[in-house]
Length: 311
Image 1: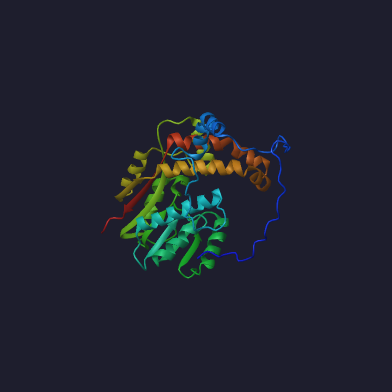
Image 2: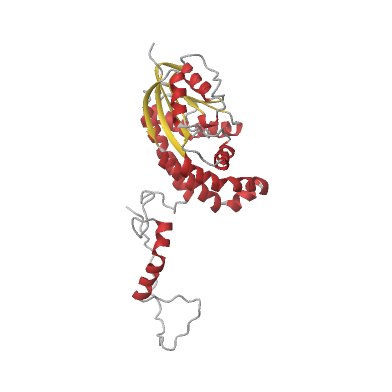
């Protein structure tokens, strides 16, 4: 039950009546429109509203459950919610067995790693090449009370420091795009998997022939080589000796994510410039619109679930 405010409401004082004919107004005072004026506004601006609100209806949408959060959510909150839903979807897809040994290759700031440990009940080892990310990851594990089941380490996806057949399952979320030698990453992930183990990974692929400046913008923004076509990805998977268990095209959500990223960058640009400086912000200015166009017109995004052959 919602909390009720039981504070007595004061009785309003009588308001002196005014004569509409003599009541003064200023140019800044809004006045109620007539039905014809409201209709004229929609006749003139209806398409503009649809371009900024959506075409399904002309009312507020349901972006988050109505009962949470209590405060008004921001676009960042909505982006966080989308990432959390994606993490749960990936866990459901990987379907790790309870009490298993799991590997997170390119763990970022550790949120998905912690969620994987929470939901699977397994032991998770996670690697990243960022020292700053490691600090945040270890704090996340500590805050969640999972430091005994999660190990965060510095690690190179192309040269993993683990013995053969160490893990029951592994995943790599948006990490392989950074690799200078993607086939080496596939070989290493397979090497450390036990026979019959599963490897879930997500990857960006190029569609068509984009302008060079667009693919360069993506590479600069994400510190990655330009994406390759999807058939190249499949060829590398086969060469590494995996069995392909599942392929899913997740491009629509990737495109929407790039839209969100661009809008949030523009919305928070002054804050970004204050924190990171004018030079870094100007460099990012130069790639954001190109990156958004590349994502919309020439980028695809795939989920692959791969199996290590039984011996």
